Image 1 (cartoon, one colour):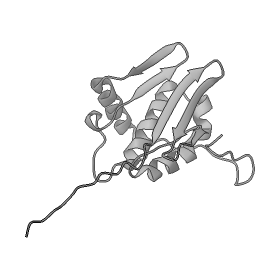
Image 2: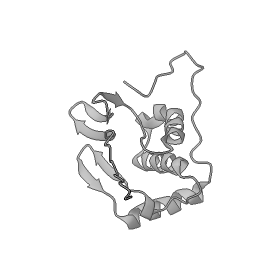
Image 3: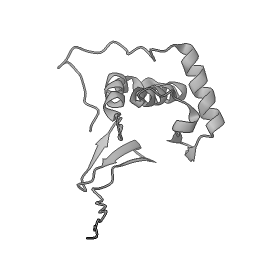
Length: 144
């Protein structure tokens, strides 16, 4: 008696983050597998992304007044929160930038590693969150 086995692949959908810039400013959209899309100020997807979302929720209100270096630092620290037992290094992350007067580009691995090394020297705890208003008083969600 022969055995018959079949391997079935089922594509459940694709999660996609889309960042862009227009005359109204920067935009970040999350496209979910259901076909819906939502605009966010900050967002993370993929495995263990809840840790990064939590980090970003505590930091996103200060993003408006942040420098480019601070934004890169926040992105890398949020990414580091998703790693379980791994060390953040340029071989396991990619950093892309789009901004006013700056075309979309992906940073070289050497630059990303230099940023990681510089931020690791600052401290293991990451940037300190700024004082926020008590819940219900001016607290804004990350989604728009």
